[in-house]
Image 1 (cartoon, helix red, strand yellow):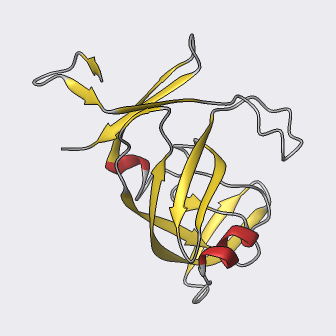
Image 2: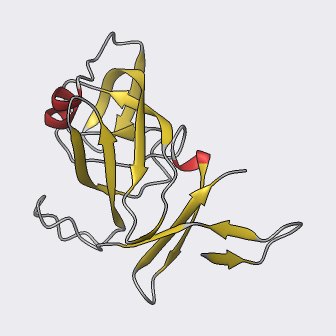
Image 3: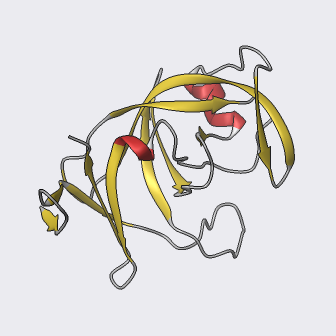
Length: 149
């Protein structure tokens, strides 16, 4: 367990995992932090997702949405992306980071369900990352995380 100094109580992080700086499967050469996440559905699904605190919700590729049984229920929400404005709906789904060491907390994440999304998997801030404590250690390429109290 790693404890970071903060006020008034120390921040405790219960899990850690090595992160990738590229998503080799996507063919992108853009450097960013990619962490392994696990989702429960009909099957347990593990995928490499870009850690992105700038995107409001977690977003999964349409193939994973189908495997998890996540369907776009309406066009009630719009998300502006590099690919343009996408229509979808918000869904709740159990998600966690896979830990190399420690015990990762499971979070009921709010996800943007979009039948047309084909640009990879993103971990999103609102409804997922905001429900956890996390830190990135670029010197060791480690991602540390734990539950919010």
